[in-house]
Image (cartoon, rainbow, N blue to C red; front, side, top):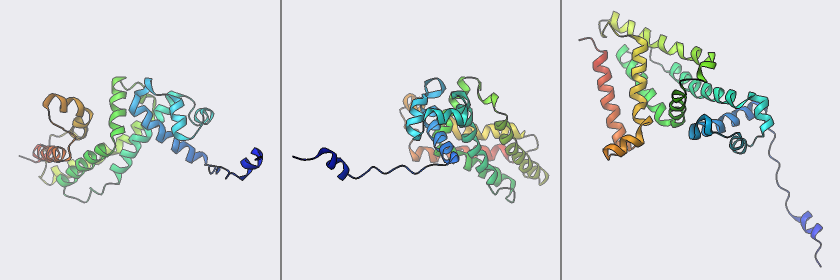
Length: 222
């Protein structure tokens, strides 16, 4: 007769998961929360799913963030912070002003295409009239330097006689953002209405080239 206890002892013991630091836990929670909020929106998101995906527990989430709404705000800050950090790391100030602004468009266009979660988060937050974004002073702080960078490129282009003199930096930045994400935020409806797959790489490449030409024509001095 076999000994069930002996058989259990003979089985390989499951490996313990390496203990994570508080910062690693925060990173994993934010990663899981980003997917959850981008997929289900704020109202539909569930802490239980975030717990499962992050390998965490509810106590840890509430210790780190305090509440579901605070976790959501932290998710928005993280997603927008990544965009701003990469924008500010762009080496554009040494370029011809027009090329510098077009490079900013190229970057933003690519960033939104690679980070669909950011498009989803912004769409959801807009539907809630920026209710939670307004609670974050950090989002305003990380956004301001980008408009300043755009303003400096415009000023140099105007001084050199290359760019039109009546362009507002903030309106220009909003235009660049719109040209970079409208087709992504509305991909399903556009594809359905016009029976064309606007998610196809070839279509997106042609649209990007069109948008670039439009932007250059707007920026250049007549």
